[in-house]
Length: 336
Image 1: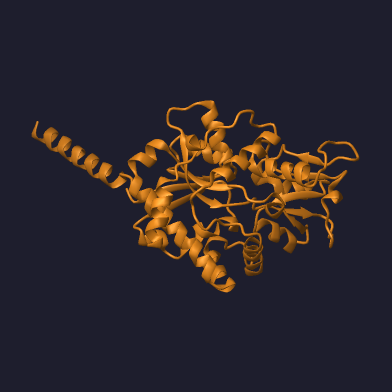
Image 2: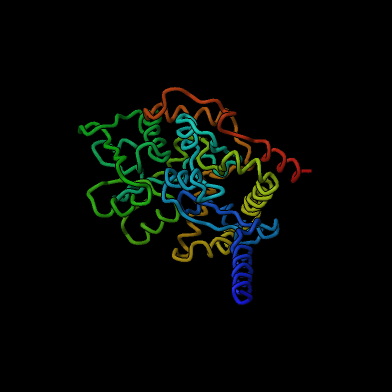
């Protein structure tokens, strides 16, 4: 009996130690990004230059390979925070949920994709795409919807398969766009950086246009968490936003070489030339927001883009999707 009691005591001690050892670090944030792109430079700068560490936060970064997958990770509790397109929150809210995702910070303010052509065109016009095929990503995703808006509303062209129309393919998953473009007769595709520049370096394409410069400002990428997570972790949310803002501010003061140094650990498979080209492209297109506070007018524009794509019939209320409270508090604190 004494041996049995000692054995049970040892088992209990071991289990208690294991539970303590395996307990999730309260300072860790599981962050799921929709894709890995220099488009999200303020985030990677914050990671690589220790801005999160200074806030006593550790980031565990995973890649969703598309906003739909990142949203799934968020609402299934596989991620604490997701970096993705705000259109996914609209879909979820309209579908109805008891623990809906909330946008608590914006990162980019326009489409980050570039139109890549198999033909080098010095004086590109969107009319050049008439009768051609563009691989634009997944139906219902913001890259495909924004591209459709540019083709129809900005360039004034029609989408379809006739000779006088633009054939926009929306049947390709976001993370497969480059490979499908490379292996089919599609003349164009849209890619984020550094993927676009990497394709150019391989002599497989030429960047001919910035979709973001054509579309104008739109809340393209943002940080989301569930209402439960935000309500339970307000200080963690504020620390997270502070680190990202410091990352953005570094981009506005550093040289291109300094920015490239800060980003290289996150893009070790890309050449330094591609990284620098990507940085310059996003600086030129004014891709990043100076404040994580989302504007209601920009959110309304997003919904117009969704309506044009046939993915939304009735607009949702701004406050049902966006919570600017912590972003405003952090900005005010940093500016004072």
